[in-house]
Image (cartoon, rainbow, N blue to C red; front, side, top):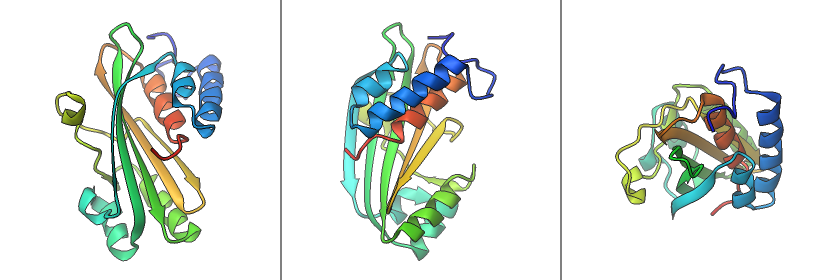
Length: 178
């Protein structure tokens, strides 16, 4: 898996970009298995939780946003994905429902600012993993009407380069709600 992306932070190789695009198409169709397979990983574990309270599970400017603008739904999932060769990543995905497309646009604008805060991911202990700190460095998002999907990945074991971790997050942001 080491050679999949360029590791340069420039968005990766043309091959990775093409595979990411194909993965996003599969994710839009609801086929997470095919989406991740495009990136040479598969789902190893998963846990999910639904709730309607966003303030309690957010921090920073994101929390401030939710104190002024109520979310209508929040679904969070945590996945462990790997390539079968000992290289694994944890993936947090949050689907945030808002009252209007305008609110969703405002939320996405705040969310895309690195360091502005976040929605706390489900605890990695739910997957039997040690505590994982999400940095926001490997990030993807998508907006569909009144829903914003936010995905982040972090390396758990082995080696997956930054471009590959980014691609996993960017593809996963297109997954339908769990």
